[in-house]
Length: 123
Image (cartoon, rainbow, N blue to C red; front, side):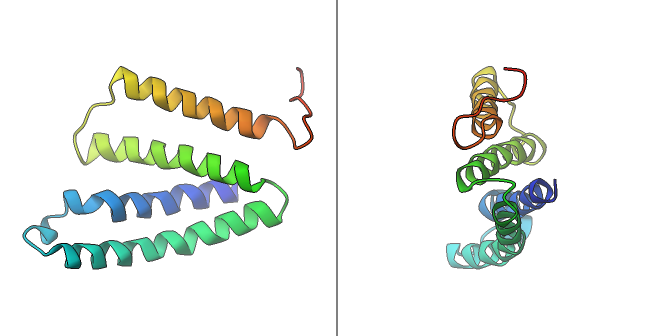
């Protein structure tokens, strides 16, 4: 659970770094160079959370590298969907919802089976 929480928090920072500048009033009229520097400064905190999340999740044996990446991508999309709705004021249309659902299905496939092909309990 600690790994997942760190991944969520790191993705909040990354979403702000990648997309926040689209709505940050203090960056209006600033050069793209300044915007990049601000984004890098925000992304630093993402790395401070993402690296421990991946190290802890992998070195503990809780997740494989593939599982970490797939989970991280799903979290990224979930965080972005909230950001797009709350900050960018964009609606989640049916096709994006179906796309996110398929990605969540990918997370299930990635984590439900242990390496070596053992099916999940009850299957």
